[in-house]
Length: 274
Image 1 (tube, rainbow, N blue to C red):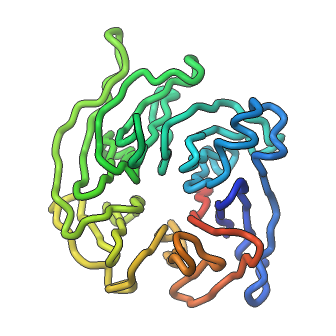
Image 2 (image 1 turned 60 degrees about the horizontal axis):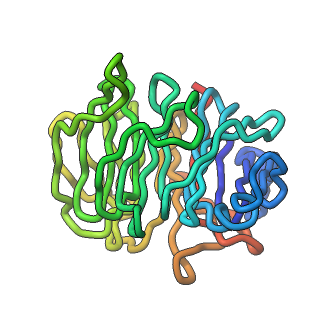
């Protein structure tokens, strides 16, 4: 079992199975400051606050976004940057079919959006929709739908990728039980979304389209990331401890905690090798 941790200009991979007590077994790391294949402004400014990290293709491809504006696709083996771009206050990133990247942008000039990028068109948005305080994007492969989380709403889109271009069609929108939508993650085996706001954590049933409070973290405020392992079902989450960041990654069932004393941790994500 392995997971990603991101914060500051860094992304780490931790082997959870080999972690002893609270000391993480870090087996891979990437630092934007050391990425020679990024332009200077990206290396020095646009990845100062990495706020999301996700693994694809059985952990071989890493996508990251930063509230400093940068987003990128990284090849795990050689750490090469395969794609990068800029979205003001980028807060979440997702890979879509057709070599498309979706990025959610939060509150900023030219932010508040969901944007699409194609790997064969470097740094150029091929589609944009407005979404106030965009904080989460998740692709549901079985439904062939994109879910996007904003300040007070959850949206469902269909992806259109044909001769007329690439775009999104808004199908449905649901008002959140609270405001301040923050993290959005899919639990494929349960056909549910987990989402957080400033006050608690919610489950969203993708069959009934109903919200219910997520009992393991009911009433927990300022949860920055939440996820469930696809096999073991162990929960992983981060919670703000000082301002917006944390120094720990937390686990439930079984309960564990790992410490990252020299890092402003923002999110942690399980890596799926299914």
